[in-house]
Length: 337
Image (cartoon, rainbow, N blue to C red):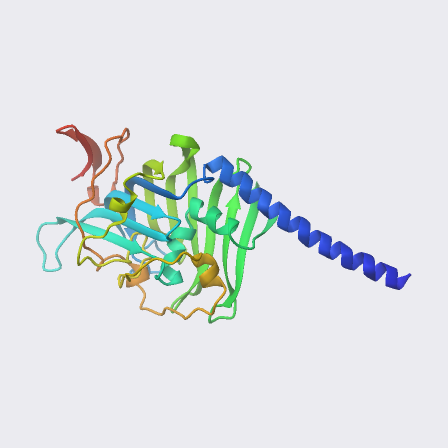
């Protein structure tokens, strides 16, 4: 009888693992369908944003300093694991004087380290793409009185602290990704929680859903916020949107998280989420407030053009900066002053 019970328990364990795998696949599939991720190979979105400087504060119990990122445009190619973001920022010269409008950019490609690639996989669409292509688990969890399906993707590689790298997504009852979490090693915070929140979803073209508001936190405070005015799936001008200007510096800053020492090279077809979670990763140590902590030395590139289909204005009250939609010579652009 004892041997029989052992066999039954063993079979039950195998069965529960199979059901868990099927549940994760179903949850990811339902969310992908609801958000228009099925058939989504690329995306671009635009709005008004702010970049934060991680660690650049006299008191870590207060929010990190934020700087405006107007005319914010980002394009992502999920098939090539590439991303480019551009923005404009009013910056005061270090020598003093009048603030001038300065361009900034962030470039990520398949050769970029995981600390940069994570910027793709913590977007709601990138998370679903990565979870669908890797081994994922799911569990139901209530957070703040709200029920979520929590999908986790964990690799065998471990951070210097001994904890495995993991990306976790919170999917609500409407099958929308509300939050994505991961952890990165940091010389100050140790295993630093990187948390991205997505709220107020809107309907785009061809079934695409996008969040109106994005907030990324590091070290407990926002390091990137954005109000998204529009998004488009599989843009025809993707290569133009991803093309960095000759001689421009890349890899840094768009959500207080890029390393300004951008890398170039041909993209790999392998999934970076699998590639970076499975092999051993090296620790990317850097002083707080530089590279992944800020965008202040990542300025390069030309002024991005804002699409003609802006229908909403946005306000950025930081330092009295006002951003609105104006129409000039038939072209609607975000203007800041």
